[in-house]
Amino acid sequence: MLLSPESVLDALRQIEEPSSGHDVVRLGLVKGLAVDDAARSVALTVVVPREGTPFARDVAEAVQRVVHETFGSDVTVNVLVDSAPIDLGLDVLNAPQKNAPKIPTGVRHFVAVASGKGGVGKSTVAANLAVALAQLGYRVGLLDADIYGPSVPTMFGVRGQRPRVDEARKIVPLEAHGVKLLSMGMLVDDKQAMIWRGPMVTSALRQFLGDADWGELDILLLDLPPGTGDIHLTLVQTVPITGAVVVSTPQEVALADARKGVTMFENVHVPVLGIVENMAYFSPPDLPDRKYYLFGRGGAARLAETLGVPLLAELPLEQDVREAGDDGVPVVAAEPLSASAAAFRDLALATIRAVELRVAETPPTQKIDILYR
Image (cartoon, rainbow, N blue to C red; front, top):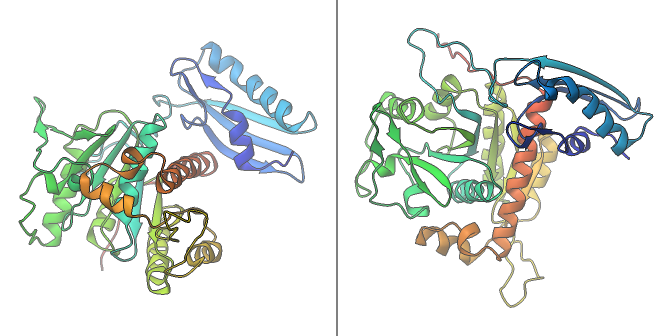
């Protein structure tokens, strides 16, 4: 059987951390993964939550057994067991510095959902991705970081509802369809234009991150505004983003901007988990096996190959998606048997696999300092 990082991680999912009931890959306990198929070798570190436990004593042997059972006894397996002050996979954050922005400490992964230009369905993708991840059993939050054009309240059916403030003066996110939600659209009249300069916007974003009680989350999705501006820079300065998902449509004008979005994340040392091609094709309801490529074919796949990043999904263009978003129930929940719902579930699986691979192979993303001359 072919040795690859993906196949090794799939095998390691058999190993459960007993106190949490989750496997070591989901918890982010696998680090420093190095796989060489030609040499038939696997090397990795397992970071145990607590030393001296039966799990800590036995996990190296468990890794060797699983790898040998899956790939053969000829594979050389080098396992290092380490410990760190983490809580079942939560990344260790740098000690807070004086006047540093506050960040949610219970969030395991921050994942940005971005696009180079508007109108490509980024927020629709973020909303359905969040619900699909929640349906898979992950604890999910969605922060609508598009301060000027918030759409999460409409898509989740919470327009007119306001988050409360608890005894600790923390904002308590609303919850719908299993997802915790915060958006500027929950705090202002939806007919009111946000005529704010950059510093006011970034201050609001930091409040949504540091002054909100997100609780314990596996993933906090950050639905970013189009382009590459103040909000994007604020985020990478405030939280250690695990990775970014870039959304595009197939036509060249959208792909050109998607390329800029990928480049922006690379410049600030945020890994790009992959590209999503939205509105990739249209299938008539009476001819579900026929595909019409209204905006071009395979553009995102070619871009992903050129940039060396995965293509996470090709999502169909369906009327149900628009209607469900307008009705306040993302299509994954509203029409679970639709082609779009199936595609979004596949996207959720691909995204979580990309997150797990990124965590296993590379060190955690660090917050960056941006200096202006």
